[in-house]
Image 1 (tube, one colour):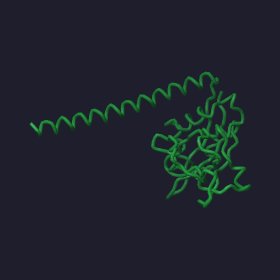
Image 2: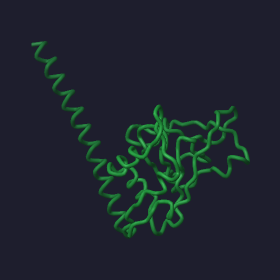
Image 3: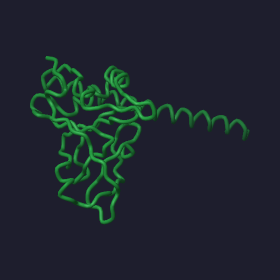
Image 4: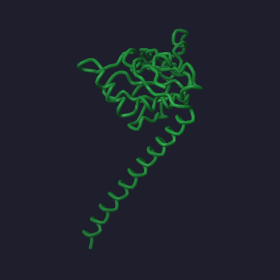
Length: 187
């Protein structure tokens, strides 16, 4: 079954704020993710608690989509740091029904190369390309059963693990080769 993203999520933009003293709230920005889109745990709170930002608090399972820049990556908020709000750099997608679609599956779909190409083509702006709610909301995705979504996510996790292991092998191979070269010089 195909469905437009706007029909399965509540879509809102992140908020703009400036860091403040006596911070208690985490202000999630793109720089808080490494190149593998993993959350960097050494983050500190940036914002003071305020009733106005409370409505922007992220919930576990929200999908953050980088709407500005050249990499429109998506991540699932896991609640590692709380309370937290997303910066205006992100669109926040909150599932209307997590029994129908897993947040991680939606993030996987958005991160898929085909979707990334489509998002890049739709982004507007000359200095900093950006997406709006319509660009993201109009994306159509196939929603298989939750069991099938879980299978896709397991395959993706295994693939990511394979890539990391391959990188480690390449790094060790390079160290070995460089050490072998040095050893020949010392003979």
